[in-house]
Length: 120
Image 1 (cartoon, rainbow, N blue to C red):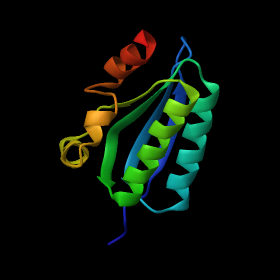
Image 2: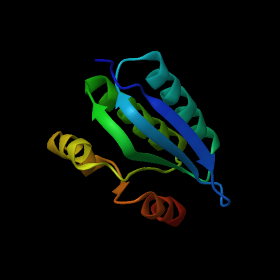
Image 3: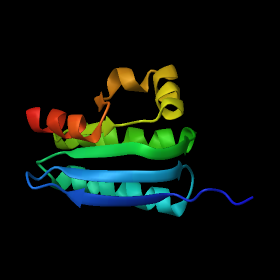
């Protein structure tokens, strides 16, 4: 059995909001840390804000939670919004169980997440 790989693509919406689409397992791999670096740079440089699309994320461990926490810290330091969006039930339950969703803005869909970013 092979482990599901992590993949990340991103797109820049017309209004300057950047959306990162995550797929697979967010855990302790170089591809996940490359996503963290790219996203933190985008947060720092993008006054339009960032949405992290979790709809394709199938697994999240403590390292993945740390990566998401780093994005939140970058967002707060830069003063640019970041919103987590479209988490599937297993990922959402985990983030809710550790109270992560109490301190991080999140939305049920990517479109709702982009609207929240625009409203800030």
